[in-house]
Each structure stands twice: as structure tokens, then as C-alpha cells.
Image 1 (cartoon, rainbow, N blue to C red):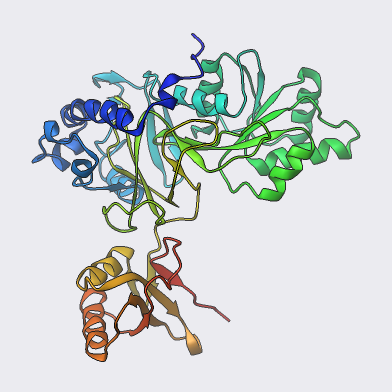
Image 2 (cartoon, rainbow, N blue to C red; image 1 turned 180 degrees about the vertical axis):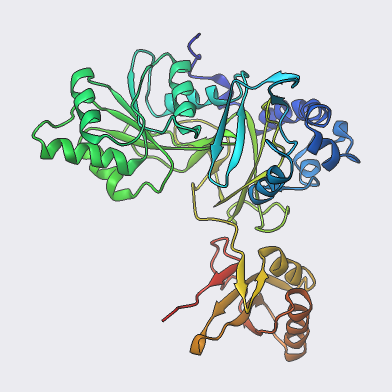
Length: 422
């Protein structure tokens, strides 16, 4: 395997040059998806692939959400018709098949746009050709171990496939082999370091760590830094591979996560396909260019927001804040499901409204709803109209509470389930 060449000059290009390159590739990619993935042939039946050449045009396409993918996979195994790769008579051969909770199944093809892209994140984290990487993501059924493994080996690193568990055996291997880099969850790295201290055999060879899969607390980041370990986050999913990554400066400090060069990322209002302005918290939606698994406008279910400006390291792609929660806020009220899309549908009927948030409580252990909406000029007639619309859309009654414009938190939350159970 040839080592990837970094630094990559594409990371320093203008936003206009980047969009020109990505959107020049997109029409052929959409045509490929329609030709080789039956579900996209149906979903995009009336879409002219050659017309999707801008962010505005892309935003006109439907969002495929992870929850929908799960249901469609159940109806049409193994991939719901969204993959171009498979086995048997498939035109493109899948190298491996993985399972994620659900279960959702993912094919891995042999395109460099699959998991090899993780090399970019590892290079930004300080990994270099010749490093020995201790990889503690699982290699069993799920793709986590393989995503990091492929990226590290593409970069020219050697990988020890440690997998999960067996703490003391892992410590023994680290003491014997002296790896310089770690990949895995931040909590397991902490367990390894503290257990090794407890055994009287501290691990001192690790200098760089690329962590993922869970929240990376600032306190743990500082604890690692005090040990001489620069820890950075990598944001990847089983379906998409690399999405974004942190790039520390010379002092090990980071400012947001940089979007990968080979995807198109949008932030949309939860429950819709509407693109939000920079700074607004919404769902991360990604278009990947994998010919084997050509996901177009895939809703990850993760919340984030676009940050202004460019990374202090000079990389010029979009930056996002990182993981800020989950977008799927569906709740059951009085036996009825209420979805974020319904709350957005209510708000759209009243253009004078700002943000809207449904707050669910249970005083006296009985469900109650209150729709909080931002408005510049409140009036009782409008409140009655909104309440009636809420009943029409959700089939449930509830109060309407007016708030000043900008008063509701910019956290992407559309449904706030604040019920407390005795």
C-alpha cells in the first residue's frame, strides 16, 4: 500500500475552488447512484443529475435519514437498495460487510474514498509514516477498527490491532512494543493509562491519540496533555467514513473540526432538508463520493453547527463545532408520536415566527405540551391560530408560549422532553 501524500495542497484552496471541484464531480456521481443503486433510481427518478451543480441545487434533494435507512434495509436486505457494491451478481464487489446497531449493514468497497480517507485526520493529529499505532476500536462485526486501521496504514503507519477489552494484556503489549500513537475511545485510553500506573508500569511511549466514538471531555484532554499526549477527535461514521477532524496547533490546541475534502457537508433544520445559516445548530447531512456506497444527502442524526473563519493551522475547509447531541428528538405524548418535522411544519405556516421548540412536561404525571415560539409582536389572535394548527398537525392540544426573538437557545433542540417520572 502506497503511503498517502501529506500535507495535501487541496486543504489550502479557496472555498470557491473547493466547491467548483466537488460540484463538478456531483452530477456524474448522482447518475452513477441512479444507475447502480435501485433505491436512488426510485428516489431520484425525476431528478436531472446534470442540474445538481450547486449547493442550492443539492438542497432541493430529499434527505435520507439513518432511521429511514434502517427501515428500508429491513424491507430490502441487505442494504435497502442504496449500495452499488455487494456480492454474487453485484456489479461491484464488496470487500467486507459490517453491522452497526439497529442492525444497519454497510458494505466496504475497494475505493480509496472509503476508509483510506481517515489518513487525513490522522496526519492532522500528528501521526506519521513509521509510527506504530495501537488501535483499540473493535474489529468484530463493526467497522470502527477497520476505519482507523485503513487510514493509519494508508499514511504509512504500522498497526497493532488491539481491539476492545483485555486491559492488562493490552498494557503488556504496549510496554513490549512501545507504540507512539493510539486510536480508540478517549475513556478506554484513560483506563489503560490509569491501570498501567496502578500496576507500577506507566505507559510513556504514546505521544499522539486520535479518539472517537464518544464525548472527549476537556478535563481528559488536559490530563493527556500533562502526560505529553496530544489528543484530537476524529468524526467518522460507519456509513460515510471520515466526516471531520481536529487539527492541533503547535501548542496542541484545537478550534473546531475541519470537514474532509471529499465530502459535501450541510447543516439542516432537524426534521427537514432546509439548510441553516452558519452558526445555527442543526443536523449534519453529508454527501459522500464513494462509488460503492453512494450516499447523497445522508442525515447522520448528529447535531452540530458551522464555525466562522478558517482553522489557525491554515486549512481552509468548513469547520464545525463537533458533536452537539442527536437530531432525532421524536417523543411519545399521550400515546401519540410527535416528530421534529411536525413542529417545523407548524412554524412554517407562520413566517413571522423565529425559532420554535415544543416543551413536554408531566405535571401530576399527566403529559402536557407547550409550544414556545419567538416573535417580535405577540398577539392573542395569533396565539389561538398557532394552537389550532398544533392540534391539526399533531392531533394533540397544547399551550403556546411567546418569547422574544433570539430568546430560545441555539442548540438545535426542536422537542425538549422535560418530563420527570416519580
